Figure 1 (spheres, each protein chain N blue to C red):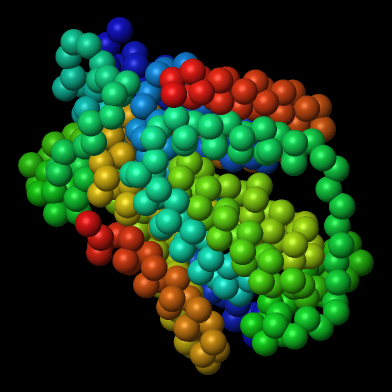
Figure 2: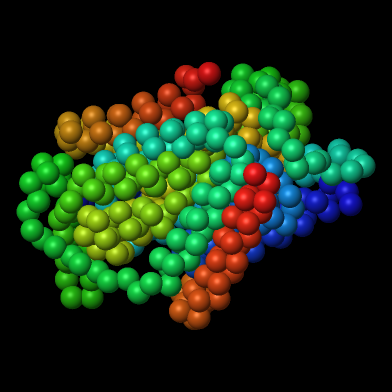
Length: 276
Length: 123
């Protein structure tokens, strides 16, 4: 096998991962890291490096579409980014200290959890109750619905902030966007509308990932020859995926992808435990 | 207030998309050169060694680009990509400043400092 073939195979795999990540709503990072480590036996440090870069590309590349919809809330996003970037710095620092098996086990657990979250039916609680802290921080807004604008005010800000810190730690430790945890922090903990949570989360993912990227770079996790096909593939796949999303049978896809994610999660845990 | 927020977001998204396009183009160009110049077995990523200074420091990457090394061109693309969210936060600081929203100038300024710290000041 030559370098050319290696790049082509990694590119096609990443394209698939990006597509899957966009269609399932889990993000490309969660899919590409297990594929690189399990199928191609790439060391997890190089895998999370390549994944993190792809996460930034996907988040920044999709930004325009989200802005047009007018759902995302930049104040909510910016305030919570204090938590996610601090968490990401800590998570990225952890990757230089903990053994690779530990990263693998946490990754597997996150995969299983993500699959469960994506399968679980989401319920939305929107509230306009004037939470004192949220009012002071102006964590409120309105979003367009079929029948006029719907106003909302964030609730339980400290809980949401804490969960965002955790989302940041996972992002930095695993090289993923951890969009699933971010969305839960906003729509379940802070009671923000689901649409606002998902679009704001997408905006936050790139900034969170950029906080770990510096540490990854200085620790030598970004191998240009590997990052190249992964980043181009995941970016391309997720752009195609978000176009397809409009017509795709989302529910069926979610079930199929979740089973796949569960299988990869178990494989990652078993694999890591065996090497302890 | 909401009109101005919207305007910040439109600038920001334009800049993000441009940044990603430039970054992807550089990575692609560097990648084509990299593959064209390679021979023999593909690189092995099974064991972690850490990338050399040329691909793990900002100054190293800058030096490599001047010699038009394929992997350094990829690296330049990656650095531009990493810079896009940082620039996004920077633009929010400016946008909130024009909205005279002091609280959020401080909030976005704090996020910007954390990002710059990660990129420039450690080790």
